[in-house]
Image 1: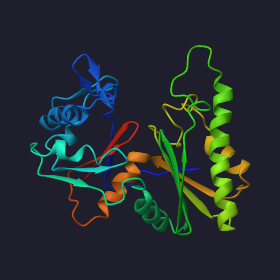
Image 2 (image 1 turned 30 degrees about the horizontal axis):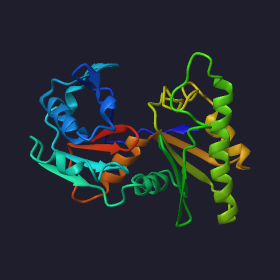
Image 3 (image 1 turned 180 degrees about the vertical axis):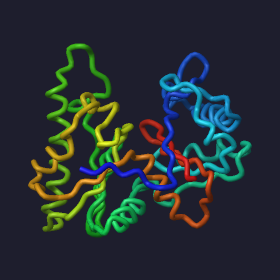
Image 4 (image 1 turned 135 degrees about the vertical axis):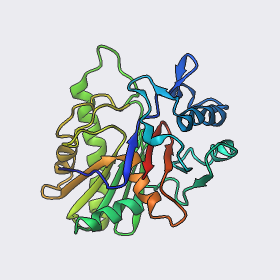
Length: 262
């Protein structure tokens, strides 16, 4: 497994921006989310924003030039961000498969061809041989939060089965074993590509998640490339000729991800 860090993309953790007595994540389902997000982004632009986990946002994000929105929840958010101190607000053409173009470009840069797997916090998306498939997260099998008695081993097994079943369907439909699969995960990743945390219980520190899942689908020699899903969306955004350096890319769905195009 290879952890990709695309040149010119700076990942940001904005999901836990401090907002009043809470964090941005707390307001994802609020009818006022767009307005709350705009206020939080103004603080990012001014250089005064803080996250609960990491403190002050890096200075590189200060005075970002524009906002680029992707993800299934972005359509309802864009208009609320107009009129901010940034110059532009753009919406990605392909909201639900925002990472596809970037995935294919990154595979090509590596001298490879293959598939994209984009694991969102509510939906799994796979692009393969000109086809697209989606699978909704079953919250009974894969609940959002666990208590102290939640069996991590069992949850890790469920996530492997979820991924393996989806990839197995794609193998059956395509009749091929891809040479490579580029994977976007909803988590910070260390230099080895190991997740550091997610709403998927047990994902944190799961070293063999992808290799086990793909092996269960019969893919034992497929090369695995991995990066954060917001980084992947930012690579796609960068391919848009209207996106300029300094653009803040936001993925809005079940949660919110962010990366800066440098």
